[in-house]
Length: 369
Image (cartoon, rainbow, N blue to C red; front, side):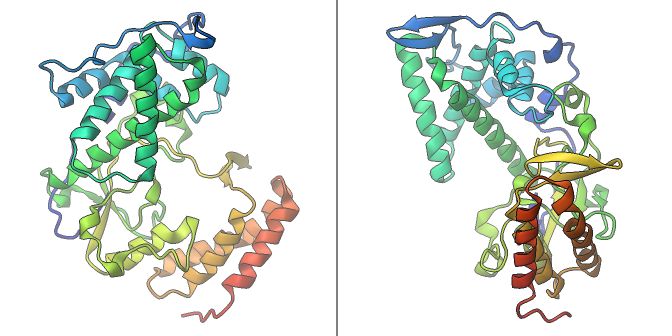
């Protein structure tokens, strides 16, 4: 979370969604025996079997927030959430879908009710939605119309159903993070991470394989909130109305990997402070995959991405706002990448080509400071 220096509050407790996800539970999705995939035919369409929806016709006297809290507290919700965000590579996509839709009798009911109530929350909010939001709302409307007619979904909606569920889960997390600004906690209780200890602060689940599976993250215990020097945009939230024209992302000179770091370093001089909220869980993985070399884990990016990594690293090394330690770290890490990645990773010649091109363009008009 990014906030100006005068922000005087923080959230110590778990957010409602995160608390529901990491609460101790005796339900283990992997231990659940998946029931058989049951389909029906409606006209010429292959469809899921009919399932009920508690909130399709409205909430009655229940508040939206109460309905969401109730759904989040269900073991079924935790299970389908963990499956939808599984990045462990322990299951194939087909296995994940099988358990997502048929892992228990009420999976689809819970997924649909969560999407319905989340859409109600969005409709009642005053926020402005962008094109990506509207695309998800169109998917919701399509599913809503089909369910209204048939009491189920067509089987070919499976990917859109999971994407819509992930969208509302992600939006839920952002809303919870935005609430942190107004909660009370003395910032002196927040742990400060020095620049020379940790630069990348994307997610507590980002690189920790011990909490990178649906089973293990249910028992995750967060560390205290931490003030950090940088945040990655993948999990960053801030108030748009506090951004001035001089505080926008520098998308003209940088691309992909370091836009967020440069933004943090630059705006820290304008009074911004950055915090990692460890009670908000976010599954995220860098690159196409992860690999190991003598016990050291590294991310495997797309070949073209090496161009921006090398070009923009050289640009940052000459930028006076970048801390010396970060310049040193970013610069030194290029050396093993240059000599090792073309031989260790697939498409080595293509990777070397992009690296050389990035070095060439990065050295243009460079004046070390």
